[in-house]
Image (tube, rainbow, N blue to C red; front, side, top):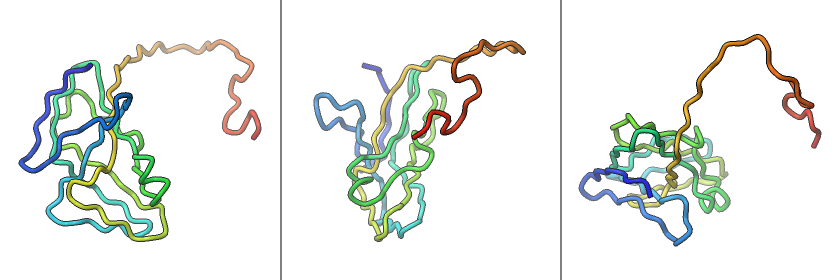
Length: 144
């Protein structure tokens, strides 16, 4: 377990795991009034939460599969990264890819949050990269 210091504004729900094996903690909307997402709309939805993530870790914000399959609701910038030095409110970029209006109510579970260990790269400038069978084969190079 990774210790996460968290502050919730009065009335905001703390993240919670909904099964023993869940890797993502559900996070909820913190709203004074419902938000309606029309098809194609994107909104920034507050959670009322601020956190202190230990150095060397990040939180990733991911869509909830039930909202995606049942309503076409997903997150842009997925997964969204919360860095260990960020102390502002966690907000979620939600978009409606469905064909019906979708209402987000206060307290609704809108996303899930997963914590990961971070490994920073050490960049070495070179003009010589090793060859592979793929080499510079890009998008679609291996067929359908």
